[in-house]
Length: 176
Image (cartoon, rainbow, N blue to C red; front, side, top):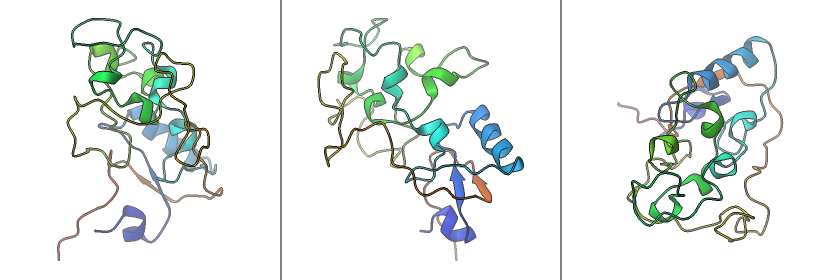
């Protein structure tokens, strides 16, 4: 398997999501048309869009932990929500003309903007790993190296010439 950048032989901007929000795609294209450089994270996603964790802007961030589905206003982290480990502007972008997003619909974040989406584990298994400092989860919000998580180290500034809008794509299968 080859990544899109490897296949094209040039840098690309990965607009993640399942589906990617139309505003994110338009934003990336507008930046390229205007000749602006786009700072990218290690996965080739624009930092301006994918720098923050979903949970940082989630309206349920400090809510009581849910123990079952169907109770409005409770945080679904213990029921499989991946918002504490997923970068994206979903809580602020909203879909359907600003109406809703996964969590507003009563579902947990599936992590669709992450490079490993879809994972092999169930969407309903509790997620382990770092949570956000100051949340009701009270776990340190750091990565394995002890660095603050949620702020992704940017790769050096570079001008990109291609845009990939294949959602959660990381690699393409090529038929021979």
